[in-house]
Image 1 (cartoon, one colour):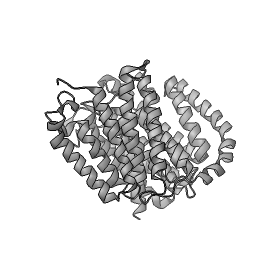
Image 2: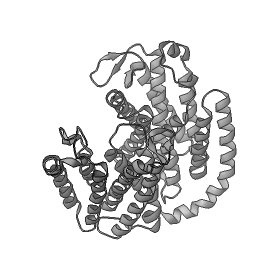
Image 3: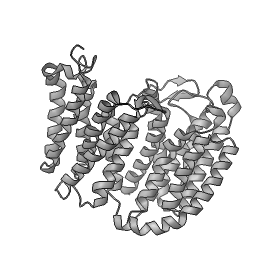
Image 4: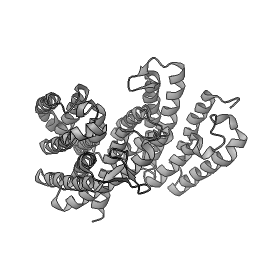
Length: 446
């Protein structure tokens, strides 16, 4: 479109974030109304008043443009966190300053392409981390003590925004087509929400225990990673990622959580090798001869490692421990269902459209695979009980959550993976996050 300017667009993107300052004085219904007005204005009036802000092709369908998705994302945040407008404000600031600065600096001073996504640059990532963190900290301090926030500590005002900006910054660099105005604030808000339950005093009290576990954690995870690589289960990079995740889980959540992590990995590895010859002949076997890379480890187990860290700072760690179990069980049971379905599934079909498809099709499920996934979920959840991570009464919640998340991931895979909106690793992370979230929801309703 003639006259379009990306720097002008990103400047408006950043300036719109200053409206987050209003949340200090607004109730959540007022904030939601403001977001609704912004959505309608950007969709109906802005194309006529400032068409040069729209990228070529967006002006014909403004509702698909980031200019409309941006305030819509803010509206969803307000509705999800009506009594924590400080979380909304910080996530909004990370989106506005971090994402906007990443585009501006990435185009003007890219430094070098990122290894995992050469269309993104180190310059843009650094700008995101610096500006997103600064805006997040500023808004956390600005919102502190207001009616739309809970009592917060220096930990939440400083560390949490930096962690949120860091996570969102790396998500923004993923090679997927999901709009950044969705992925960035969602990542920031969910991370902030998990950290809002951390008691700094409890976290400090846990550090001596973490220090004691650190050396054994490094030793056993080093041996396990080397063994897994020797056995052909992981790549070298996958082994390194596994060490980081394993050490974090062991050090912050203890031997029981780590044992469940290992069990979940073994279940996935065994399922991957099962029927491998048939999968290879059909061209649907896991790449690299079945070796799992760092993307697999991060997608399937990083959420559990994060929950392990959070659990060490909670006065009552039970919810975080349930999240650890549910995330690991969900990821492993989904892998078992997928691999068993590819090896022995007689009929595979898509949930979306309910049509029969070839084995290995993204989002495809089978009766055999689904049954194996449910069985794996039950066995691993039972192990969580034996390891004293969750009570016996929580097993049904974990199994239901794992099954629901797996089916939801199949539906998302059938609709979003093909056009590149989400890739397989992102779907796996969403799957484990859904499993943890549904388990917590079901358990809270008991």
